[in-house]
Image (cartoon, rainbow over all chains, first blue to last red; front, side):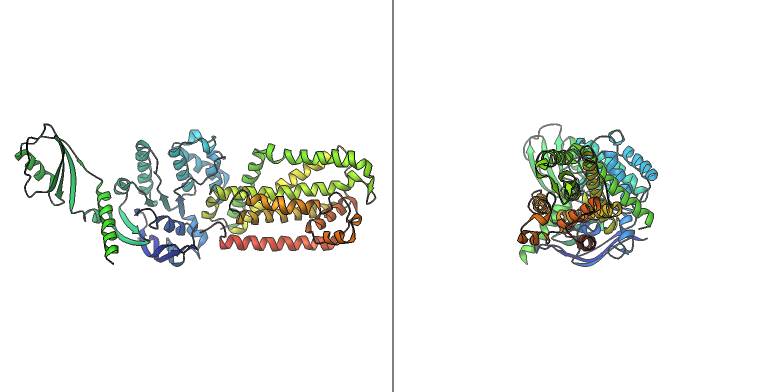
Length: 313
Length: 257
């Protein structure tokens, strides 16, 4: 399979002396739905900036579908669509004109541009707004407009930098569906997000970047398998009477109130064993939920470990 | 990028630019027309009657080429500087920088946008002038060449200003403190032959003096300067500023991190 992105030893030091990337190497296969995660200032946006040529690299090699982004500017840009973190279209232009203008930049004829604009504005629920000024759009609509604009030239690779930030849950879910469909139709997607549930739900492979270095680069499945414990919040039907001894199955337990418990169990322990234990203790479970998103838990653990190791050094 | 794609990209930028200043015509086209109209009424008609002839022509006829040139210079410059800086400010310039549009097409699109506005305002001024005087052009080809070259020069200058600008103040400094004095001291309202030797010699260092006088030669057939030298200087300015602009775009100055 072709590599959609191949980054080797990428470094970036800004003019103010800030080193944002320190020898990043990354491969994203064609057709992948890939998550690039990291805390604020980790280097995600700089990496995306270099891929889209808005940021100049200090060192390293960047290829899109096998072509160097500096020596094959036209071909690599044609293959790439970018949805930036911040709104970056003119607030005074009409929705339809923004998409048509972008199509013009890619050399699409008026006829093709009009049909593509209609296709993507309709898919993203913006067709009715095509004659309105973009400043009148809600935050979620502005994000969708940026997606429509990035897709108008039908790139093989789409990079989304926090596309659902500040978007309500309903809209976020509809955007997930749209992006999943797009990926299934063959578009390689790279996503950065702070909603780790989003990355877990959508992405097959993942890289975690921190301090300008890739600290994890594997499949989502493999990464989640690294979780050695799960924490659940359990609501009981009846109030608890006295202290409860859970035994060796439960690593730790915290009583939140008379009917609510928080327990941590090993990742190897199956749910049936847990329910057997509750039955044995005569506790009726009314509701059970994970305390936090699995990826979020893992992400935080990894970052904590990294911070600890840096402190030791 | 294929030639047809380049042309579509170029056309897209030009159409976008023209649409931008046409949309806000009350801010872009009407004010300069009113200002120049007032110059005609106040300086040309009321004051001009007392001044009498200048360079062998009625004072209104004498100042017309300079007023047209003033409108072209100011509007070509301000269109490109404000539009390109707004693109930078709103970050919508990223749409262009991420796309495969070559730098020379970006530059050409913005410059042509500036030229169209400069020439549109120049045309409005000429039409207004025709209500006051009989507008007669002695050397049409030269007149058109000079006005085109001048609008290119100031569109390019506006582009360079916008690239370096970081705030809205930065885009008004050059027009206010450099362009306006150079235009007013460039012989729009007088012939340099009227000035004392020192000030007259100083005027020859002002590039706008050559543009105004060559344009006046096109209209009236008289000039304070050597027309060929002025055309050559305009050509050099166009080449020099184009190279500087392309180099800035290539380096990503003020645009790419």
